[in-house]
Image (cartoon, rainbow over all chains, first blue to last red):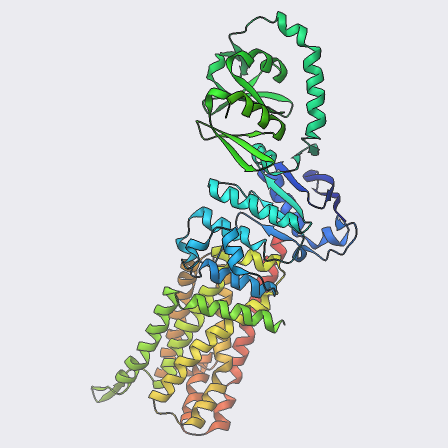
Length: 338
Length: 241
């Protein structure tokens, strides 16, 4: 069974509110869609409209989808009753959905046991969000939509989210994560897409196949690298001038929208050099290709966070996180000897 | 109408209301008013050979209960869903608004009715009078429930509810004053205050058949409030669409 979006989009007058989306999600897929706020809201609003289900723009390949009530939604603006406790809230949701679940287990999974009798208004922002994540374990559905689930939450809550997503995947669910952060979408999703005015574009393909291609490319250019001279500066364009950065100033380099972006002191600069070239040049300065789209300065890395056996990220000294792909994890482990 | 859903929503509301400071304050203020009005009502002052009586027993108490408890509590608990962002879940679950309204209204009505009954017992009403007065006040309480809900439709938060409720309260008590003073009596006949006063007085005198006839105007006002609410809701839905 697949969850299908077909011609899912909206045009008002001459304005494209949401570009047409064609997407098929298979069971156990965690589809992460990186989009700006405008498209994200348009996407969610359209998902809430009955029209999308009536016209089969959203449907199940083998099953009936009545409407928005058949889907789980986690939205950033959803609140909780401030005078109830997490335990009472969970009981209320169980009664509302008409299901019997093991409340102890849900509290444990959401790591809310310690605050189970504390009023919701006294919970921290992250605890409140964990409570909302817990609702996904109660609602009887297999389709889950999360909007910015990791926005502003602490590390503990991110781990809870991972655990809950794994729980949901155990029951052959379809999960869609909408986020504005590319790093988060790469970290959480098994399939990553970007929603832009050009529509929905797959960002990451089969990682292993790509690794092979990259390895081949690397071997082809091996001879060239021998002759490469040591570059001391990396150039970036800012307005009408070019800035030259000392390699060690750079925190990490990212490829976004086919552009190479240098992250320096919490600022972004578009580089004139390609990612591949930068990688070659900065290798000797301790830069490491942690992901297909990221090159990180290892001197800036403070933590290697293991979310699950397939999900890793690097936390830099400036608190920013950079995804670390599964295949690169072993390489980094070897490199850093831990 | 989903009875199970209404029951679940009601139970949650009751759990929540126990700790709702605003609602509790209004409830206990109305409770204190039972005794306050009772004492003042029995205190008659003679001024220039004219006897001045403060308040008018159950009629005055009913006005306080219906505004402080019925209107404000209903407004507050309805708007809280919007304020806290908890209403989004109901919208996504496609829980009908009528079910939410009914669940909250039953709770608010019960609170108001409890106070009203305590008042009637204290003011010495007989069991039959209490029963008749309970039937008589149904459209009146419903009217205030609808007004409270309409305020919540306009308001963004509980502060707005307090703000929008004040003018309604002032106008209502102003009309109430006119009813008691018999000034502009012909005009006051249009408002529910007059009919509540007359109806309750007749019930007090055990003239139940005539008393219950005064339910008609409060019932019409309840209908007007309902139409107003429906209109407002339709407008809101069309704007959202």
